[in-house]
Structure formats: C-alpha cells, structure tokens
Image: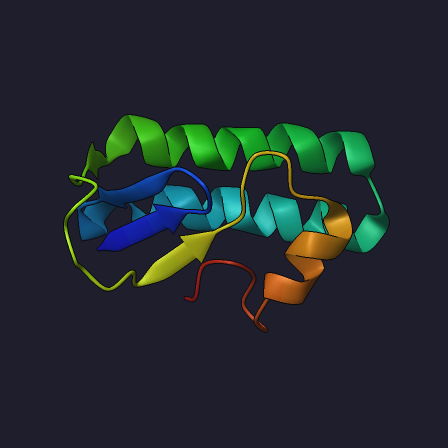
Length: 92
C-alpha cells in the first residue's frame, strides 16, 4: 500500500500493517468526536510515526498513486474532519 503524508512524500507499507494503523485511526476518530484536542494531537503523531516507522520511503521522483493520504503533522481538528470518510482516515 502506498501512503502519502501531506508535505512529506510517500511510503510503501505492507498490507499486514493496516490493522495497527486502523487501531490508531479508530482512536483518532473517537478523540475528534469527543473534542479531545490533546488526545487528537497525540494520536495523530502516533499514527504518522507508525507510517514512518513501518513504511519504506519512495523516491521523490516516483510516480505512484497514493492509496491513502494522511494529514500533515500540524493539521488541525477541522483539517482532518474534512479528510474523513465514514471509516475515518483509513478505510476498513
């Protein structure tokens, strides 16, 4: 799976990591719904860190379509709300 973090480029992750990312995505969605700004910041950072840790960076000149686009680390609650689907940031 090709994942883009806005402003940072793309990483390739094995499908086996989707469950870990979905768990963080569920936490992020719950924090957004409750208005927990501090929890939101912490969980967004954890989600992006997991993608960085688990994924292999693609070269800047690679022209691969992103299957998943995640917000930048400085995204606000409102920014992320606009990106959400019914399943959160990560489908499934």
